[in-house]
Length: 370
Image (cartoon, rainbow, N blue to C red; front, side, top):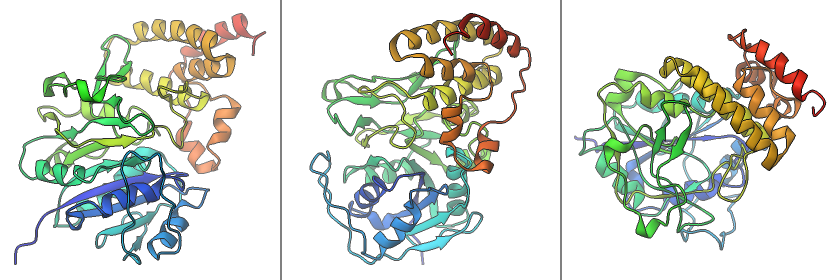
């Protein structure tokens, strides 16, 4: 008997109790939902996300419809069979919850989900999806059809803003070869009037909506885990060798963006937390993949710090600069990672000691502000 291949879905949650049910309902009520094998990896959310998922699956925690949702959602019939697993165990059935027990960042959660699905013979490709996303009914099927009929390494579809579904958040990404700065292709453009980019325009696919072939996983390996968050999918794409990056037409999702980590969106500036990790990891990425560009990236960073200082204030600018220099984060950023084990992974000692000279120089100039 031939078993139809399934598309594995990996959703990493951290403090996602307000959004995860909408995401899951949009997948489970889509046509062909039986062709999905969904794994939710909870990174020890202190807001009780994992417990909520268990109660929701039993039919005890239905979410009221969101009138602002760009996708009219209906509830999947409950109870739902939900397998509870630990990291390293194989996913089972159509819906699995992995309680990781610790928070070691986005890529850690993604990799535990990929490992749980890769062990299954019936899963032929993998879709990494953020919990603050909602999928239109046609998207899961289009991704599944693409994954089983096309040659690719990594692929994605259009991400639109949940709050402004008429506006593109990203159609994939480009990386500046001088500074390591990433930008979303077509970010802020009207969705109805903007064609998808050609495949050769892409440098990476957003980790919020990322399709991965089994060949890619077998050849390139898992997503790098040391970034904690930001730039892990960019680094992963830069390891692709001859694998192609692709865009899937009609496979849109609606993404709130930064629901748990307060990333910047069209409506708000990034927080100190987002600034620290984004710019620290950008410098790590430059040293790994853009040889000889660290000086240019550093000069750009000083200019960016001044811009953020003028626009958003000292805490955000100071977090950015400490991230760029690979130094310990400001107290407010460190407090945002509550667990001691998670902090040890998120904030390792900087291997770039010479940058401390620049740090001391900054202290002398800006010390009165801090």
